[in-house]
Length: 308
Image 1 (cartoon, rainbow, N blue to C red):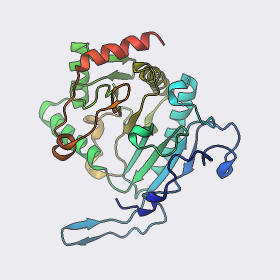
Image 2 (image 1 turned 180 degrees about the vertical axis):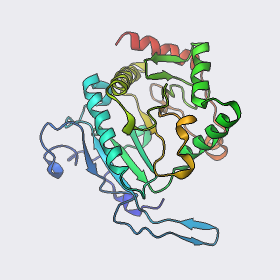
Image 3 (image 1 turned 30 degrees about the horizontal axis):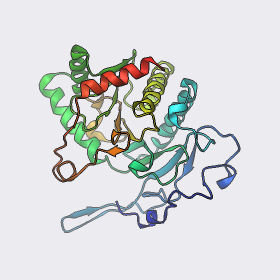
Image 4 (image 1 turned 90 degrees about the vertical axis):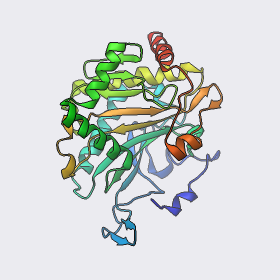
């Protein structure tokens, strides 16, 4: 995707924050709310026509980019949220997902967060983002295209198999509730690459969440993010990516059989002030290596959660 205007984004300004009230007409002491991205990659006013030129199939930048502001307090992070505040955030995600799902030109709603300068954050005010694409992004489509034949060959949901493997091993599980399990999976690239996986097939997207699933996810997020900050006794950087089922896509209408709602964390630290970079092998060959024993990392995180 090409978005030259994004190069004009403010870079960690010291004098003003556009997400602090009363800037941009934001009310004092607001809680979670949405804000249209000032430097969008996609926008709903874009043309809808696509074309093919030689080997390239190009599409217009039709879609939606929004910033999700967590709190009016410039210094507050999700690690400091209470379960009740997480519940309000999840309800907001749910409302945005439901509203955007009414647009049949959109195929995937991706909610994510980049935290700290180590992952490229340009504004420190606590916030996440939402991108609504007119296509299924490649990573999610890769997951779907691998999970579907697994189900067809094994007659089992791939995520159920992952959960069962980790439950049998027990070493990598961090937290488990009725509706979700949090673990550091065998295949993660990162030291503390936590996955939160839905244990049931009836909540493929936020639209399907109930009060009980929302409550479980709120508590599991609260404990994990608070524990993250204790690992190196500092604010813990990460990328948080929420993988839901696609919308308005004929090919994956049956994905509840083989896919699960899940959240993936990509935390880049390998020590207090050392980054595990995605270098040539990881980026150029997709051949990542984890430099630590993930079972020990899971045990450390589990023990930190006990102290919260």
